[in-house]
Length: 470
Image (cartoon, rainbow, N blue to C red; front, side):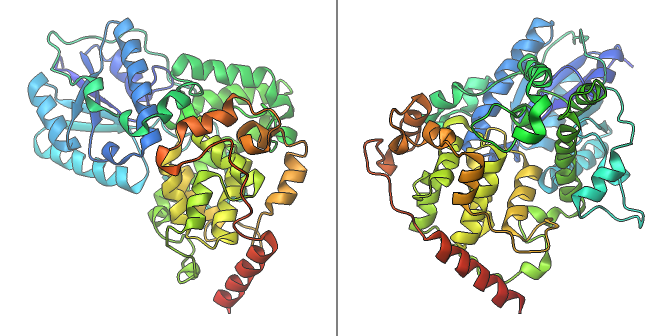
């Protein structure tokens, strides 16, 4: 066959560890890389769209440097792909699988439409280490608790990364492409874009360097230091994984080699890689996790669904609880948040403020440059208590004791909360340059009193839980 292959890129903007791309490159047929601003991508929040724009610009340059190009089209996926097939004479449309319910709905419709038109759609693995349907309990069901899943998969041989595509056969004639600048993906960030640009690490080469730097140093103390938000102790690869600038098999095998070479924290890092797998395992087998309480017995729990002044202060990083505010401001300044911070701010919102976890989930959807549909949904449900947390008690994080344990010298708080820093640095001041003008915030303002007493908030949450359970 000599007809072109349309290679539909989504959250897999890389050349290595990409099974669909590797097979297309070796086919000998012309390959036309495509990215669609489709009905699903249109729904992304401000920070994810900004980060996607940067990823696409970089990946487009990468393809151009190897003699190919990235074709951009805007419109519903099935209609746009059918038109591209007509424009190019392509008979095959390939892509890497996605596993969240919105993407599955889109992709199922696309496959049906393409087949009806006499075309050949084909989806490939590549986004995960294990396809969700290949991992099961002894009873044949999906895993609902992380630790048994880790024990199950830790000895499974993960396929080696697919070879890096060095060249791509090109068509005789390229189809028309939109201009990325015309999409305006970055506009919703407004003045916050310049602040995010200082922190984002974009592209496949930078992602691989990030991995190598982590495995050359911080991985050795990863297990002991990963919960200290002021320390450079984590890989920070979530940003690059979110957009597929690095593949999970690449990470797995590199970390496994470090483990075999004696790196003390490498096994614990591998566990965190599988935690991502667990999130996708859950979202595939129980898609309601994105919108409904994962545990049905939590239906009717008296969370507030109102966007109250307390919720606004939570979003603004002005709760009057220093560690909570530092994490919320880190989110606005860097587009990411340390994992310990995510647990603390999530617990504070859902427990101390008794606010529905979906309000937090939507805020993260809008603010995270490492936004991932599975990790975000599972994380919020886990911390709210209605998700896959195996703890035999109602978990409530105390931000004060968490600060004493993980930020005793207030290095993290003072990095991001200008009002509490004797000499506020660039990141603390950047929050006020990035946040909406309508908030009317200033680093010269007095630090606010707590929106709620931690003791009173905890007592109210426990009362609500006991009442709901009885």
